[in-house]
Length: 91
Image (cartoon, rainbow, N blue to C red; front, side):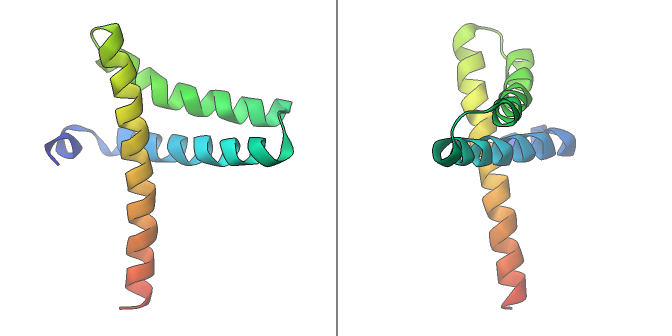
């Protein structure tokens, strides 16, 4: 939980949006196939996840681990936001 305090709100928003787009484009690519628009979405999502990880990492392994850390952090932000919205509806 201490890592959440270290990251800015903009970086958390970027990771959440990029993770959501990455998953959405991957699911769409699975069903509809590869096309130009889907590839552009997938590329922008990977860059949105990868650039903060590369800037923060010192070595290659830290960059790879940082990419997955940012991805899962963004995924948790999206799932947490959806669950919080659902819980506020039924509260």
